[in-house]
Length: 188
Image (cartoon, rainbow, N blue to C red; front, top):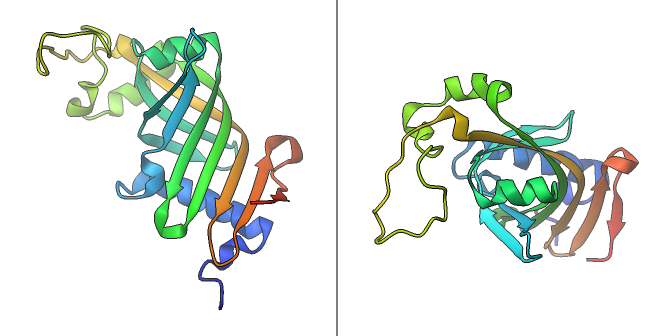
């Protein structure tokens, strides 16, 4: 049987395909890479995972961009340990991506241009009111007031991408910044 996913047969094709999927996630609301799971570690050493919206993917610099509320728990976790993992499952391609990254938190003047381009309804996610996760009396007992001071950008500098393709023959590869993304096949 022919492989329905020939992009998984060589390291260069696989690497190009991974980036095509990531870039598509920025522009296509229905792409699996649009909503990856970001994992960090709490101050108590407990793994924390949450879904974010991918806002930017730049292959030449191997970076991904996300927006967040500066008051969210993930910001404090990343200030303590600026390392994160990202998980993407793309069912249509039978492809799992696990990404290791170092994270840079950008705020204030560094992100004011991005804030100015955000639609008004999107700005509601970044509020000066109670922090995300604050207990409330019932499900709608909160208000949101857009506040640029609460807006932050997470820039993930990718260190490694582990790709697992579950095709007729399973294939797994790891690409690292340290080997200039040449890649290495791994046992799946």
